[in-house]
View 1 (cartoon, rainbow, N blue to C red):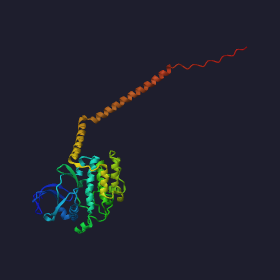
View 2 (view 1 turned 90 degrees about the vertical axis):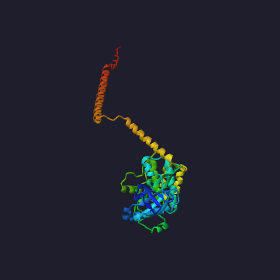
View 3 (view 1 turned 180 degrees about the horizontal axis):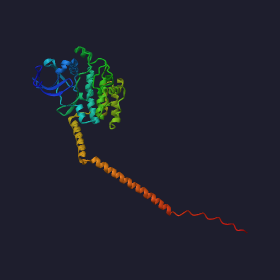
View 4 (view 1 turned 135 degrees about the vertical axis):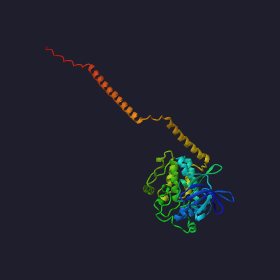
Amino acid sequence: MIGTVLGEKYEVTSKLAEGGMGSVFEGMHLQTGRVVAIKVLRAKDLEKKITHVRRFQREARAAGSIDTDHIARVIDTGEAEGGRPYIVMERLHGEDLAERLERVSPLPPATAIAIAAQACRGLQKAHDTGVVHRDIKPSNLFLAEREEGEVVVKLLDFGIAKLSDAQLDNLGHDTTLTKAGALLGSPVYMSPEQARGKREIDHRADVWSLGVVLYRMVTGQVPFPDLPLGELLMSICATPVPPVQDVAPWVSPELAEVIHRALRLDPQERYEKVSDFEKALSALVPRVTLSADQLHALDAKSQRAVARRAEITADEPPPPTGAPVAIAAATSERSQTLLLIASGAVIALVAIGAYLALRKPPPALPSPAPTATAP
């Protein structure tokens, strides 16, 4: 693809990443010189999976219909050679939240709240347009760094988004992604209604998924880690999530309460709107902005902690060859020595006790009663 010109407008200049459905390239608009990101469906997926084509179209339609700074902007769409669809988006610099959590986890509560609050703004805009994302997870939250140093959270990948009826009409009202029984989303972050395969999923599924992301950010783990898929889905559907403070005692009761409200099993008991979720978060940390310096400082702190642990380990002298045997022998010798000392002490105490008993004067005999004298 490198060097290819798409739609007679965009020259592909380099490859950025490989995704589940396609490849992402950097490109340049030939007329304006604007640098863009171009997502292209792989040829093998075009030939074998019509569902992937539908997802591509759905992503372009959903993201392109929402006007907010918290969703990666769709600039253009088209078809490459061989009928492969592509999406032209704004070029983002930074990393997704999953990459950050691989290096630094858990995050400070204030940082986690700021990330979640910005994600709420993007989701609310999507919901206002009739779009439910249905796949909110760390890898779909991009921490975009701007030139002035500000970090903006951008929602990515609307490939399985639920669209409004008008938007579906423009896509031929395809239902291959929404039939009953189909699991849509990433299991660990999936809402109970998604885990049950329900067809009617509304915006409160996104509230749940973002709640799991926030749980992950502040505790360092998801609510149900390391479970096989079947057990995971059953736990999501029937088991309240473990209390945040049991997993992470450093999290405040107020923040824990906000998270648990988003993770109620019954959708009617969650926040009615994502904007309500944002308000609850903002009440804890009012409108905190994210900066690249702030995130880089977390990286540096984490690296110092790792380096310190390495220094402590390095300061410990390595055990000599055959150390386990030598240690075991030494331990055995010490045990035998202690046993002999203890036995000797017991014998000495017994001997001292006997000696003292022998030296103790016998008890005095009672005086004989006086003899009566006859008159």
